[in-house]
Length: 238
Image 1 (tube, rainbow, N blue to C red):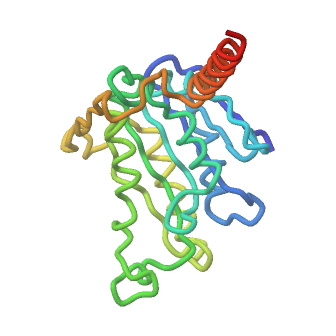
Image 2: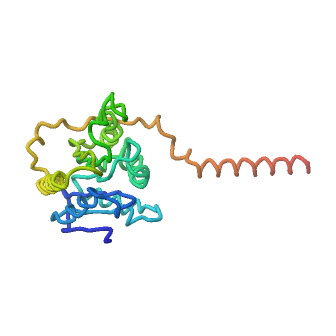
Image 3: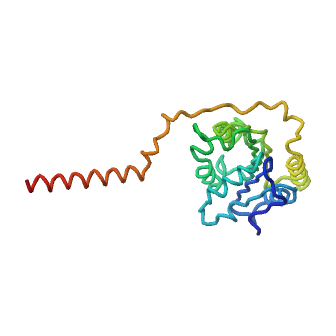
């Protein structure tokens, strides 16, 4: 399977789709959403598990692709009420302090984040009386806050429930809606009514100083130890 597809060369204002599924062969809906995304002109598509099978993410390359995009799409199945492991690692490593958020982290400000996800369980299970105990919206705050911390607007998610058992007609209709929305961005009817992203500045005092990273700490400990040994040797020879 081709892992990276670009049906155009978006400069600014393009779309970057991050598709994450650890088992594409077993996918019923996400695989078709991935194919639909690849067919939309001007969309940069990245199959994360195909691109990084060893989980060694090229952070600089990912950041460059994000810089070229206006819309960032997270496409994946919901696993344990969150995203697949490699997608989470991508968030941890690529959305770095000083680049994506923080006093100088402005690379993503003003962009849009769109969650396109599927669940294996039916929507009725996401209910206080269901076995998931909460409405599905209760699991969205981590996505919303990730967008907010980076200065991005969180667009209304596109969620497909019951992916394992849904009728074929419903799956086909959902894929068609996704492709239409992806291709028509940013000309969505509700776009003008959406609130701007919430400002979430992170003060420098809430992050360790550059000199306090692990490498610097190890270096300081080594230097202190050597200084003490030298002092002890000097004292002993006096």
